[in-house]
Each structure stands twice: as structure tokens, then as C-alpha cells.
Length: 164
Image (cartoon, rainbow, N blue to C red):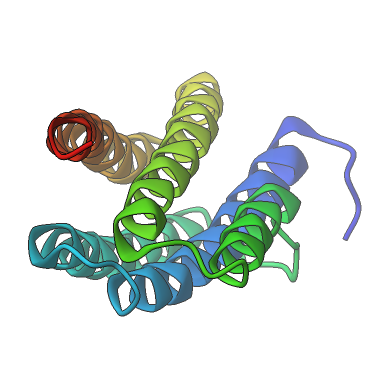
């Protein structure tokens, strides 16, 4: 794929995000099966469903601009998945693994927020109103999920400290 125009960059970055969202969906499934807190597992499963919708929104954006998603890896998300797997392999206590999973999921959300803000900005500059709406929907979901994760992390940390 040539990378010569802002549109080429937009398609490239959106393709990487599409790849990243697919990895995130798998990662959320993996995490939800490993955490000790059922509320956290439910939240991760719910976000996995949202992630599937976000993938559909990205695909709709590709169609709106007449582009095809490219095979572009998302190294940042792959690294976060690897970090989680390596930590889980250290056999932490269930509560500590749950706290780590929450922190890892929050890192993912912050990456996604930054990526979607960049994509929304590029869509605005190109006047791609359909993409703007779809990408802003994804961005808002990511911001809401980040807030939930922050609250869960704080509450779980308080509970863990109360038992020490």
C-alpha cells in the first residue's frame, strides 16, 4: 500500500486500529476467563461485545470512503497482550491477577482513546462525516469504559488493602 496522502495515512491507521480491536476482543475473552471477580469478568465481557460493534463501525467507515482494510499490525496492543500473558504466567494470586488485568485493560483503553481521537481529527480534516460519527461513537465508548475501569480498579484496590 502506498503511503503518500493524508487519506493513505487514514486508511493505514484505521487498518491498524481494526487489527488492534480484533486482538482486544480476543484479549478481553482471555482476561474475563482468568479474573477472580465476577463483576470485573462481566464488565470485560460487556466491553468485548462493544469491541465487536467498534470493529463493525470501522468496517462501515472503510465502506463509506471506498477503502479496504489493509493488513497492518497493531504493535502496541500486541505488546499489552504479551505483557498480560507474561504476568499471568508468573502465577500471581487471583486478586493480584484481577488487579493487573484491570490495569492492562485501562492501558488498552487509553491507547484506543488516543488512536480514535487521531482518527476523528483526520476524518474531520477530510470532511468524512460518516466516519466522524462512527469513530466518535467508538471514542465515546472507550472513554466510558476507561472511567468504569478506573472506578473498578480503585474499588478493588481499597478492598484488597482492607484485607491486608
